[in-house]
Length: 360
Image (tube, rainbow, N blue to C red; front, side, top):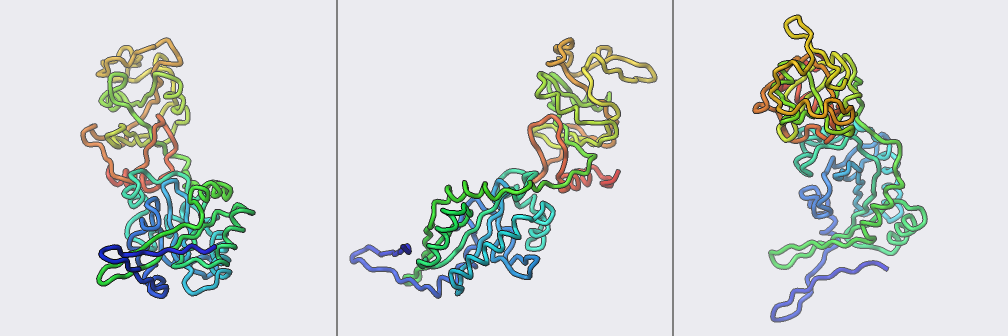
């Protein structure tokens, strides 16, 4: 049955605060756009009145920290059948939105890139995969029995990730209040959204660029890496195996964790165990055991192929000292020693910092 929400002021006497359905509908969208946390603190607004390819307009489109999309549709003066059918139709369009299209929608509706806004909101980089699933929210000032029946039917019988949230606007003298109620438990709807997953939407990889995490310390030193031209990882296969992705001719964006990006270079030789690597120094070939290293323990476990350092030889194009490392919110980072760099935003920002064209 429809949910009834009321507010009573309790002072010397008990007095019910008045509710206006018309005033609620009028203010609701503006309130949500101003502060979407009233609906959910886990959402970032992508756009308002987002136009679909069919000429229709979604009231609001949002994204959560996992990169999943949320269709927010206000009931306004439409019938229950109209608003639910329209929202489901929008969902059929949203589920196919690509990574690049989502970035474009945000830029068309806001100032600045989605990567920066996402990092500011969630204190985390934008995921490499977006729109793995989606949810539908019907927003209204009051719940009618027909809307309730339709949503319950779709949710319970077909696992459609749909919910209804009801806001009521109350006014007492010069004070204004808003209340919120959900028809269904949002956690249950979130579980159902996993059934909407389609083929993952990842930002396209340019088949050239990688990020390498270079842990500067006793096992490897950034000064050594710059002087002799290499990156490395070791102390276990889990750390070194991702270096095997790096092929001759690939470009790497080298980052020191907790500091930032310190260099861009080209791979000139694929990963090898440290004892098999030979460097050309002033026209002479030398093994790493013959080099003057600042890293105090780079030669650890040299005869153990699982634990020893694995070396990728690099021709550095641009580099800075560790103290000058570049980092801003929204740049791509993860814990792997090497991984494909799919983030065009990161490529643009880091190449701009180092002062040369992206296509170098």
